[in-house]
Image 1 (cartoon, rainbow, N blue to C red):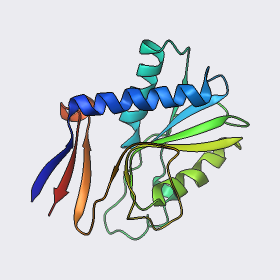
Image 2 (tube, rainbow, N blue to C red):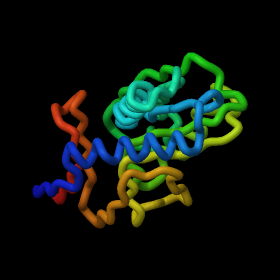
Image 3 (cartoon, rainbow, N blue to C red):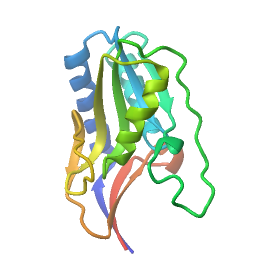
Length: 179
């Protein structure tokens, strides 16, 4: 197994600030906008963006929810091992709000399709956008594209993109892993 660094800590930080600025340009005061981190891996990115927006760009009180899509996936019954769901934490109504789904890597698009189904339990948003740190553009199974992307990566065949966050792995980095 080989591992190539795609983004180091400094580059991840630059991308996070660029994404935060793009969100501010589009949503201004976030009064009607909600960030939704897709569990489990979108959580760290969503929390980090919320922190940057509030502390470094003085955006007041951004609503952040965490959405578990485990039982909304079309493949959840196709595995032998028992699935462990994460906790959904959405303590507000999404009815008529602009929702921004946040995930670390956009691969086949199946997770986002599941999130579109799952969010309906919390109301009908007026608009849904997608923000991802990494866009693997040549691997879609569904016609889903991000509105905001940190970096586009052309990973093929047996290559995987692995995102590490300082909160759980001690470093911010993105790797291209080949088996």
